[in-house]
Amino acid sequence: AQKITQTQPGMFVQEKEAVTLDCTYDTSDQSYGLFWYKQPSSGEMIFLIYQGSYDEQNATEGRYSLNFQKARKSANLVISASQLGDSAMYFCAMREGLGNSGGSNYKLTFGKGTLLTVNP
Amino acid sequence: NAGVTQTPKFRVLKTGQSMTLLCAQDMNHEYMYWYRQDPGMGLRLIHYSVGEGTTAKGEVPDGYNVSRLKKQNFLLGLESAAPSQTSVYFCASSRHGTGHYEQYFGPGTRLTVT
Image (tube, rainbow over all chains, first blue to last red; front, side, top):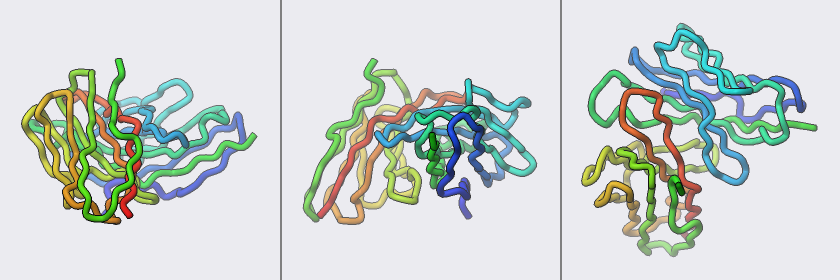
């Protein structure tokens, strides 16, 4: 079973509108973290936002917010007031076992990504 | 700070040739990773290292070897390249700890094996 599922291969949004990119995850750990990365056409991976499993509030970073629903195991990225520069591939990723010692809990598992296109 | 750098940026190999990809970071991070990115597959972890002199296998380690002789460098080797190893390779690094230490990525290396 996939640990990270992004069900939207592609999404379109009009400039200045809000858009939600879906991410569901699968883990039996109690302590884990969820990340969103942006990959523009230039190819670099840019960290956007993080949500810890024990964080009581949804994470926000500027125009990015994370709609974290722990019981449903979803961590959707919300981009408000979309800009043309937001057109990119977006990846959801998970880091499990945060409460464990050792090195294995630093790995990220990525979803397959959602290609967002912002139309003028 | 340069962050995470990768050498080379592009490479074309013939089947059976060998090569080494170099990753360097100047953030004094303990942890380093190698991923490959294929169309429609997201990023998949090849190998990772939790410190100088230590390495471990990730999700797709076959056909690759790694070494971490210095804390700031992480090398990925292909001993006998195959067309299935045509991909974009990303190196990343992160601090250690239980916080939300994100991984910082290099710009990627585009490898084509013919």
